[in-house]
Length: 175
Image (cartoon, rainbow, N blue to C red; front, side):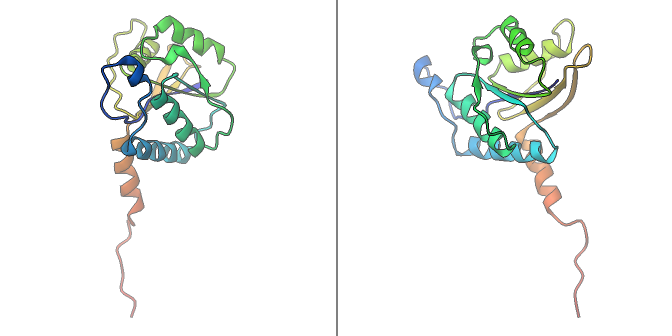
C-alpha cells in the first residue's frame, strides 16, 4: 500500500474552546493550499482508493478538496484514529483496516500525524519529522520497515509549480 499521510491545511488560529475549535474551517489560504497540493499529487499520478479524515471540520475539508482534485468521487470516510487525541495503536488499527488497498490518503492533525509518521518509518519512533500545514508524505508500506518516499509541503510545491510554469527557453524576436 502507498499511504499518503497529510496534515490539514491552514485553518487560522486555534480556539481555546475545544468545541468551537473542532468546528474551525479552512481559511482562504488553506483552501488554496488544498488546490495546490491536489494539483501536485495529480501531476505525480497519485491514485487513491480511499480517503480517510479526522472528524474535525478542517481536516474533513482538506480531505474533500484534495480528493476532488485527485478525481476521487466516493464519500470521504471519517475516523477518530486521525483525531488530535488519537493514539498510535488506533492509527495502526486504521492502517490494518485498509491494508488491502493500493493507495490511501489520510488527513489528520499536528502533532500526532508527524509522530505517527516517525514511528511508522523507524523501529523505535525516534524520527522527528516536521509537517507544515497542508504537507503530504508518501510512505511505501510494502517495505519493512515502511519507507518514506517523499514529503512535500505547500511552500515547496508552490516554488516548484512557479518554476515549471515559466518557460525555460529564451524569447526570440520574430522579424
